[in-house]
Length: 232
Image: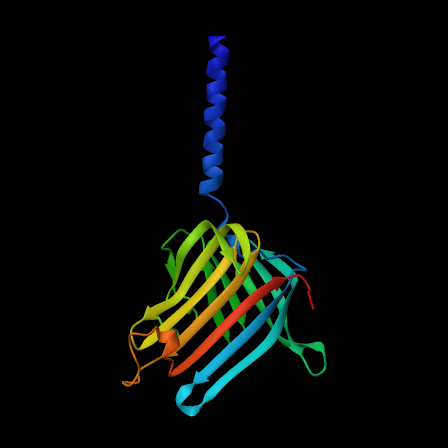
């Protein structure tokens, strides 16, 4: 009887250790899953404000991405993709450009035309930081992407996800300007939403007790919401 109890305890400890190891070494690339045949549509909105000139402009457009094929070379996976732009006049998708991702056990890199973007690095934890423009000739090394939060439950765009990733790309604010750039991901889903805000409010006649959003001089606000599947 005593022997059976000891065995049971040992089995429990072993299974507990296995669970801890699986969690600790979880594949963070699951925050940006890729596979052949995958399709997503990005709904884009850009708002431009120039108060002195009386400009208040909103532009919206749709882009669709299709993962056409995958090539595996040693420990590197290449995903070749096609991006389409929706033509509202012709009511159809038009070829926009070709690009690809390269995913390794250390990073996810996106190659688009003449640009290279370091999307994510692996593994990730709170505070993990990298230069999004690492491979760009015109890189701004002072702007870094940083993991603000990971593996936490969050409500993103009205939907609750049990394991999410929030990345801050550029967060800098004073009384006269505000720069924010955030991306939101869900594990086993991918990118859900990105919002980039740039506000200038340097008129001496403004009431600086008001939030900067209520005393905008010039601003650019970009919003990207992603839907998975060929919804259009």
